[in-house]
Amino acid sequence: MRKSIATVSVSGTLIEKLEAIAAAGFDGVEIFENDLLTCPLPPEEIRARAADLGLGIDLYQPFRDFEAVPADRLERNLRRAGHKFRVMERLGADLLLVCSNVSPQAAGDDELAAAQLRLLAERAAEHGIRIAYEALAWGRHVNEYLHAWRIVHMADHPNLGTCLDSFHILSRGSDPIGIEAIPGEKVFFLQLADAPLLAMDVLQWSRHYRCFPGQGGFDVAGLVRHALNAGYAGPLSLEVFNDHFRQAETGRTARDGMRSLIALEDTLYGAAHPAVPTGFAFAELAGPGSLSGVLSALGFARTGTHATKPVELWEQGGARLLLNATGSATGSATGSATGSATGSATGSATGGDPALVAIGLDSPDPGAAVKHAESLLSPVLPRERAPREARLDAVAAPDGTQIFFCDTAWLDGFGPSGPVPGEITRIDHVALTQPWHQFDEAELFYRSVLGLSPQESLEVPDPYGLLRSKAMADPGGRVRMVINLAQVGTEDLRWQHVALACDDIVAIARRLRAEHPDLLLPIPANYYDDLEARHDDVDPELRELGVLYDRDEHGEFLHLYTVTVGRVFFEIVQRTAGYQGYGAANAPVRLAIQHAGHH
Ligand SMILES: O=C(O)c1ccc(O)c(O)c1
Ligand SMILES: [Mg+2]
Image 1 (cartoon, rainbow, N blue to C red):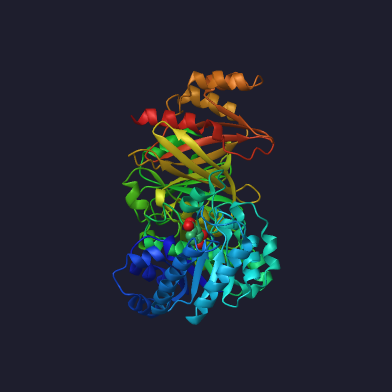
Image 2 (cartoon, rainbow, N blue to C red; image 1 turned 120 degrees about the vertical axis):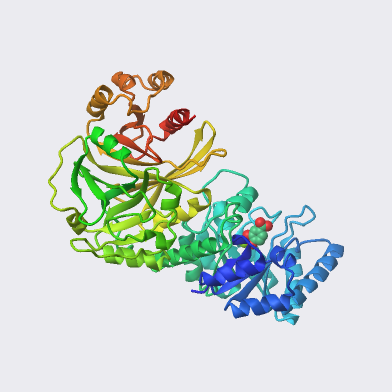
């Protein structure tokens, strides 16, 4: 389908926006009036630049507060519209978005609204222009899409149709099934935006928190399906007002928008994800020395050294960690030695401190997984194949973390290794703090490229700010990823952690307290006083051991944390009876203690 995007969705000047939008592969744009008014070029030149870039100008918008007004205001509104029509002719745009009137002067009179919109459509027709009437969710009288359609139907003019906007429809909780009652050819335009599910004033929600489909909580694909069923054949056009997108890198946001539409089309056409990962093969930590002591203390044993690279394999139960002694941007030793070529941020951000640089995922079909990732515009990392080295398919996540799709052959590079019995059974989850402007991009990446489904979304208080957190998991709960966004004053908080699953955390905690008392994060007595006030059946030994506790409707969660080394710390977790969360209630306690250790 034709893919478009409103210029308001990305940062930059109008020309920068057009260039980035074209580079990302879009077919067309909606030009926002503000971008035109602030552009030094005349409309004819903007038109020429767009044409040179291969972009159609699919829509010009918005035209506000037109309909259902007193006669004197109608005259002024028509005069204003006439001016816009001439601008649009110079621009080569033939569709004008008119959004429903928000003014207190508007009358709640559908017949008046229809008559005046008909008049507008007649004037527009003289210029070869069509009008798409859109119900804003906060319109004074018209704020439901079917209401806007009733007025369009009543006005009955070939140059007047409706514009559907997924945000306005879904934010009000309207059922999008009603779209199927609108003749497809009368839907002149379809705007798409997702949003996190927030309980707030709808105008503020729309103007600051919209995001690309697949980054929020709306079923945007479901709505599009209704429009297609109705016979809609126009563009899918992203229209996103977002405070972060307005500041982020233009090209990157445009590409992410394109990724979102490609993923949406995959959903629409029922393309099943070709290779959802089935488990963690490994987590790779780069940075010399200090981590091996922590791993030994946690019960890991070094079981192999890579044939050609300074990388060690450490194992315990089904958990595998790679220690990469280089700690440099050359990144993962398992597959490519040139991850930096993709613009990986990992190395430079690490600055030599231990950091998590790569995640290996057990994949039912690594080749298909990487092809799918590539179709979603993820940078595929170059592969090197040294003797005895497994060929590995990898892509870069938005923050530069390398994601490897593995079959079991990757282990061959480390020579024969036997099972290492121990208390740890496997990797439970990996948590990565994202740069502030890449959080939404990371969510879309993990959802679309890996096929993970969103779980809980939280805001966690930290002593110096607020941490936004989002969890995602595969259907079997074997691959769990948590992405965090640190909004913590001036400090660049970039912690990452690997959570390790076990079946008896009390035994592990007893041993660690006895043998490595400085390794564990100390938990305040106030925490346990409160815990005992909330639950009268919690094992009192948890207090002595510093084990944290949570429960949900399914089961219990016990966990503890190590101190942080470089950017990395470890968590040990024990889930019982299908507990699905991550101990969110305890996150503020952890953050406060971690910060205390850093000051
Ligand atoms: O926020 C607004 O005013 C606004 C304007 C035009 C639109 O298409 C829209 O969805 C919202
Ligand atoms: Mg809109």
